[in-house]
Image (cartoon, rainbow, N blue to C red; front, side, top):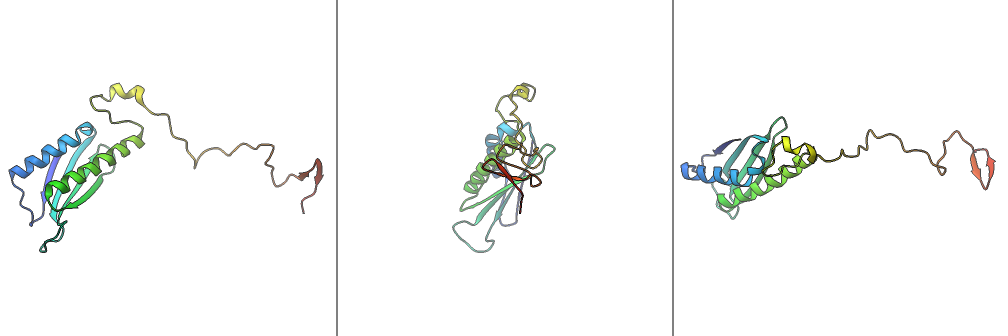
Amino acid sequence: MRIQVNSDRNVAVDSEVMAYVEGEVTRILSRFTTRLTRVEVHLGDATRHRFGARDRECLIEVRPANHRPLTTSAAAAAIEDALAEALAKMRRALQRFFGRLGTPAVHGVSDSQRVGMRRAPAVRHANSPRKRRTHLTRRKSQPAIVSGRRHARR
């Protein structure tokens, strides 16, 4: 997992900030490291020249192997708070993403050990076969049965 830290011209990123961001990303997303190819963290100033309560912004883009990228963002008064909020959102998004794939992201378990842990396939509604006909349903071509006698459809 490669970690890239980018910023706009309003946010000064030195080696100390880079080390903090990389440490937080590896700490919070550690259970997904084998499944992620790259994590990009974009730090910026949301209001640019004005000051406000939520003027620091953090956008995180994660690229799972062989899948589409996922992004989350957060705004806060400090970069640390925005980073923590965006990472918490990303952790939830990755848990949901890998859970829908049917392979749980279990910390400390390799892919070869996960073979027996797969979920049962989900029920497909769009391509599922038609509902079996019961005694209560009838085809339109059949005559209606009312109290034991057959009546022609009008």
